[in-house]
Image 1 (tube, helix red, strand yellow):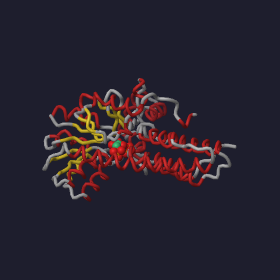
Image 2 (cartoon, helix red, strand yellow):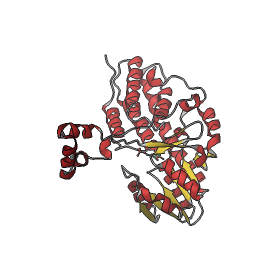
Image 3 (cartoon, rainbow, N blue to C red):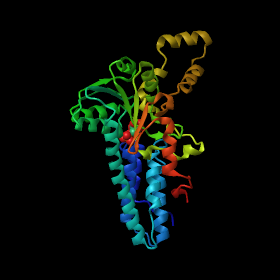
Image 4 (tube, rainbow, N blue to C red):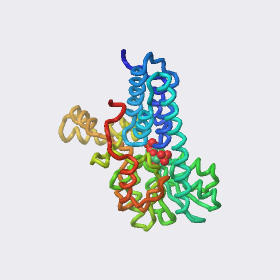
Length: 342
Ligand code: RUB
């Protein structure tokens, strides 16, 4: 019999792939919740079937998006806690482990927020990119301790996650200036910090985050604005300790260029059409070539080298990026086979 995956897992996987659930921490939380639901509703006849089904569910979640390591870290955490000789015991241990993961995730974010807030002074202006719940936790904690904070929020094309950041900051009462991504360097002159989250952090201290983070960090260094990365330890990528690189997700071209826009670019204007016909006397060949020669690339993330980052703030304290590997070794130790591949 093929493994049985609960519809709740499949629908969570669909939501992650379509970015209705997005952001590294939120994805991890939703994945753990989905595994708990499958454990709760499982009608597996025996322990082996229960475990096999849970692994299949984890694999479905794992295959949604490749860059945020919080997802495999969450799945690994839950599956490694799946213990017991009976279906009842396996069910209980899996649910308990998933719930513990979710509680710890929330606690880690609020602890990280308090640590990050110590870097922010009363009256500071923070420049943000994308939407990061870890980054927002730092601002929220600073506000709670009575500091006034203002924000310059990058729109973050193509998905405009900056609008989510702007809305949440406004809910917290933070004055917000929303800018297009291209205006970031100009507004760095008015910023005291660049504050971003992370999808993954590599062993050398590189930060993988929303596309545009690396350019922002380089400009910030040139302008003398410190770059702070707010990232819980579930963003640490264990595979990078053994030389693996982090996969950068390439997303659909239609996030950047609609079919209509593509057609507009590709349909030659009357003027250029008559010009090309006059030159080579063959318009059929020309139009077929132009169609295949318009490529759209849409990488969702980029890599910021450690030298452009001033501090990585985690729930275990703040670290210069070059020393993050010490924490990684302590937390992950030896990497072994992934539980959903066993
Ligand atoms: C989201 C993104 C966020 C990190 C951190 O990208 O790059 O900065 O995931 O978020 P996408 P958090 O919108 O493509 O998922 O701090 O909430 O984990």
